[in-house]
Amino acid sequence: MIFAELDWTSIALRVFVYIATIAVAGGVFIRATPGMREMSGIISAQIAAGIALLFISEPLRYLAFQLSIAQGDWSMAFDPAMRWMGLETPLGQASAARLVGAAFVLVGFLWRPLSIAGALIVIGSYLLEGHTVSSDTRIGLASLLFLHLLIVHWWMGALVPLRTALQGENNKTVASTVEQFGRLAVAAVAVLVVAGALTLLILTNWKLDLNQAYQQGFALKLLAFAAILLIAAVNKLCWTPLLETEPERGKRGLRAWLIIEMMVAGCILIATATALSFPPAEH
Image 1: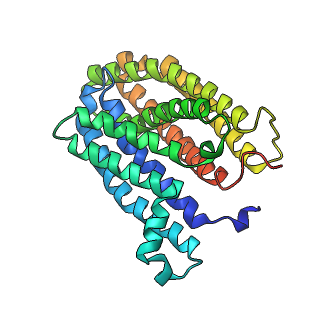
Image 2: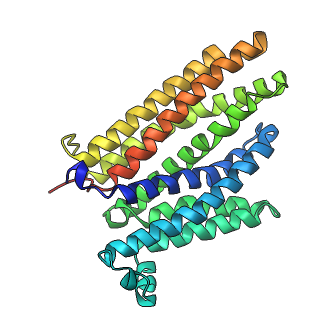
C-alpha cells in the first residue's frame, strides 16, 4: 500500500479522536497528579472541550466506517441492520466504550471518582481495536499498550494547561507546578519509550524490518518520544531553575519549548494514525 492509496479522511478522524481522548483522559490524570491543583480550572476547561470533540469526531468516524463497508452507499450505511452490525466490530465496540467513558468523565464533574473510572475506560477502549486484537500474545501486549497509552495521555494532556499556567503572575506557584511535572515527566517518558519499544518487538514477533511501513512509522514515533525526553531534560535542567532567579525569562523559554513539544506530539499522533493503516509485519 502506498500513501496515495490511504484513506486520509479516516486517518484525520482518528487523529481528532486521539486529541479528544488526550484532552479528556489526560486531563483527568493530570488533575489527579499531586502538585497540579493550581491548574484545576484550566484542566477542567480542557476536559470539557475534549468531551465535546469526542462526541463529534467519534460518531463521524463510525459513520465513515459504515460508508466504507457499504462502499459509499448512504442508504445501506444508514440501514438499522448495518448500524448494529458495525457495533459488533472492534472499531464499533471501541467507539462505544470511548463514548461511555467520556460520559462517566462528564458526570465526574459532579462526583470526581467517576472521572478516574471514565478515563480508564477511555484509554482501555484502544485495546478493543487495532493490532492487539489479533495478536497471539494479546494479554501481555495489551498490558504494555495500556501502560504506554496511560503515560502518553498523562504527558500530552498536560501540555496545554502547563503553557497556559506559564502565563500566570504567581511565579512561585508556576515554578512549583512546573518543577513537579518535570520531575515526573522525565521518568514517565523514559518508561513510555521502553514500553513502546517492547510493544513494537512483540507485534513484529521480535523480527524488526524497517523496510515495512508500519515499523517505520512506529520507530519514528519512538524516536520522537526520545526527542521529547531530551526536551524534558533541557526544560528541567535549564529553564525550570530560571523560574526562581529570572521568572520572565524562564517562562518565555518554557512556553517556547512547550510549543515545540506540542508540534512533536502532533507529529506522533499523525504517525500513529497513519501506521495503523498498515500491518505490523508482512508475510
